[in-house]
Amino acid sequence: MGVIYFNNVYIAKAASVVGKLENEGPLGEYFDLFETDPYFSQDSWEQAESEMVQRVINLLLSKSKLKAKDIGLLLGGDLLNQCTATAFAAQSLPIPYLGLYGACSTIAEGIIIGGMFTESFKVNNAVAVASSHFCSSERQFRFPLEYGSLRAPVSQNTVTGAGAFLLQNTPAEVKLSSAVIGKVKENGITDANNMGAAMANAAVDTILRFFDETKENPCDYDIISTGDLGREGSEIAAELFAKCGLDLCGRLTDCGMLIYDYEKQDVNSGGSGCGCLACVSASLYFDKLLRREVKKILLIGTGALLSPKTVLQKLPIPSVAHLIGLERV
Amino acid sequence: MNKQEYVKYVEDREKKSPVIKNSILAFVSGGLVCVMGRGFADLYKSAGMGEKPSVVLASVTLVFLAGLFTGIGCFDKVSKFCGAGLLVPITGFSNAVGAPAIEARSEGFIMGVGAEIFKIAGPVILYGNLTAVAYGIIYYICKCFEG
Image (cartoon, rainbow over all chains, first blue to last red; front, side, top):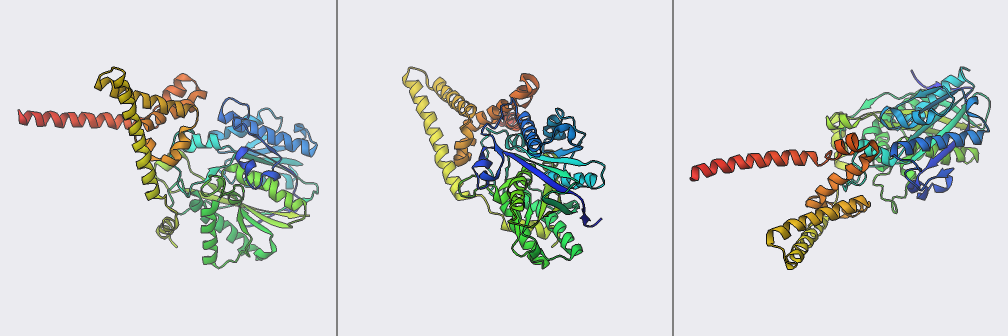
C-alpha cells in the first residue's frame, strides 16, 4: 500500500482542550479551553483524562452545531491501558465507537480510518479524538508523581491535552488530501527515556515513502510537522533526511518542540503523548489553515509502541508514523 | 546505518546528565540532611534521652519529615535539584514508600495502597534483607574460626 488519496473528505471543525502547563506555553492563545485543575474536578487521574476527552468532544459538537446522535462514528484512543480514557468518555455518547491504539500517532490513525469511512459514504461524518494526561501517563509508564526521581535531558514531558476533529463528506474549508499508513520500525533503541530517537526512523521512513511516490517537492508544503519527536528526535530526523539527500526546504517542525517554552518550562526534550499532535494540530495548524496563512500541510503522527513490561525486558522500542496531508480549499 | 551504528550515533549525540554538578549538589544536600539528623539527635539528647534512643528518634524524625513533604507535594520539587542527596539517605526511602501509596489511593486501601506501597522500595527491602542474612552467615563463620 502506498499513498492514499482522498477526494471527498473534509475537516469541518477542530477542538482542543489542554492543561495548565500547556496553556502557559507559547501556544496558549490557540487552544480552545484549558483547565488549571489537573484532576479536572474528578477523583483519579484516569477519570481526569476521560473528563478532558468528554469536554473536547462536547466542544467539537457545539462548534459544529451538531448533536451526538448526528455523528456517524467516533474513533479515538489514548495511552492508558485498554484505552480507558476514551472508552469511558464514549460511554455517555450515543455514537458507534472504534477504540484505537497507535500510541502518540493515534490522532493520525483516527483521521485516516475515519476518512476512509467518510469517503466511502459508510458514514456522513466521523469524529476523531486523541488524548494524553501527564499524571495518568507518568503513573502508567514511569514513576508515581511525588517520587523524587531525576529526568534524563533527552526525556520528554507528556502533554496534558486532547484534540478532536470532525470529518465529513460535504465540502468545508479544510480538506483531507492524502495519507500514508506507517510501517512499524525498530532501530535498536531500548532506552524509554529517548523516545525521540526511537521514533525518528519511523517518521523519516513515512515521509520518504510519501515524497518518493508522489514526486512532490517538499517546498510546496508550508508545514511538515511530526507529532512528538521532541528536540532530540527532531534533530536526529533532520540529520537522517540530510543523509538520505531529501531537502525538506526548512519546513520540518515538531509539535513537541512548539508546545512548550524550553527556557521557562522544565520539559527537557519537549512534549510527547497522543494529545501533543492532537491538540497542536486542532489549534495552531487548523487555525493557520482557516486563516489562509498556510495552504498545504503534512502532519506525521509518531508513536512509540512500547509498554512498561517490554521496557523492563530491554526489548527495542518499535515505532510507527502515519502521515496525513491537509489542504486549504 | 545499521542498528548498532544507529544506537551508537544516538548515544554519542545524547546530552548527558551533568554528573559533576549533580554530584556536588548531592554531596552538599546529602551532607545537610546528615547535619539535620545530627541536630535532631543532639536536641533529643539535650532533652534528656540516651545516646541510642536519640539517634533512632532522629532517623524517625527525618522519615516523618520526608513523608510529610512527599504528602504535601514538595519533596519531588526539591529532590529534582538535590538528586541523590535526598534520595540515598533515609529520606529517599520514605519518599519511595510514600509516593506510590498516595497515588494508589484511588484503587482503595487493599489492592491500591496495600499492593502498591512497596513498588519502588520493595527491591531495596528484599535485597537489603538478603544481604543482611548473607552478612550474618559470613560473620558467624568468621566467629567460629576465631573461637
